[in-house]
Image (tube, rainbow, N blue to C red; front, side):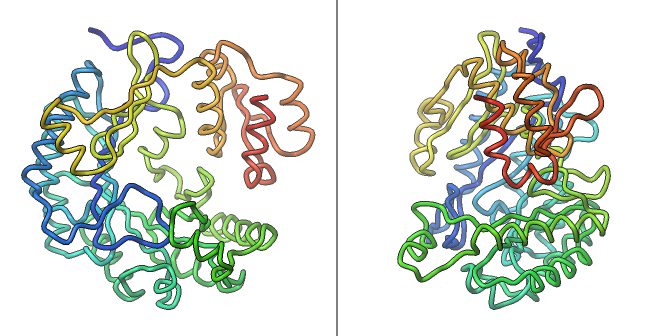
Length: 392
């Protein structure tokens, strides 16, 4: 079977990526609603690696002829894996698909699990970029966020990453309870001084089912109101722009050319295989674009893969309307915006020119070269409303 072609050619715009989910953490953060699990007994990495290999082979059989442009090892805490396990995963991917000469291979790490020897092992295994979950630059905030590391440990981890990897990034969470604009400005300045090329800066969101949700409902945790959150967002853009780390996506900032290719693959609505417990994927098959979801519970996923050769529990052929809406929602998060012609090719219906003109006149959208449209600095903070207006 040859690679699909046509208006939604899967690699034309963003390449083909592989996401691998390692679901285990040393502790569960109170704000986290990701598919992460704490296990007090040692994880059988040999057994899980065999299952990952089987699911990779299954996904490769469904996506022949692809060339992998990016790999992302996420979680959970992938840096809890032994380097030999990471090497086995990357060897399996390289054996299943062709890989681009400049393939980007990112591993997420928590500062508490960063060791120089382990990072040397990851580098030898083929990882060429790391993303560190720093989250805050002071101990009081880290404690409030339920993090297990100190600010000193976090900066030591960043130093270790800089020693072993030319490309590294770290995350911070802002819009924390009682966080002032002045304090965030100072914290962001400290972060930029330690960041080589990339920062991911996320507003704290209170997700249902998390401990923070219960605390907020009881009035024991009070996040910033909308106006204060907007002020924090605005200073984020200002400080990062001035430092040369402009926003290329609403929550991601990078120096020119240092954007995460895997992030771009998602936002440009590319094709990616989702491997591991609870992983989501978007594949392009002869009968259309597919959404895949694997079993969330690690042990149940493991048993399913050992029985069936994969852990997929849901495969959905996305309708043209679904594809158009996903493309719009993802692509408008990017500073580069979207090509309306691709939206029309996916959905089978063009965007309403009158709605575009209204949003441009309101200062929420802007036109750029090649007919693209993008959210303006005024439109980005209210992107959900902009997308809803366009998709109506």
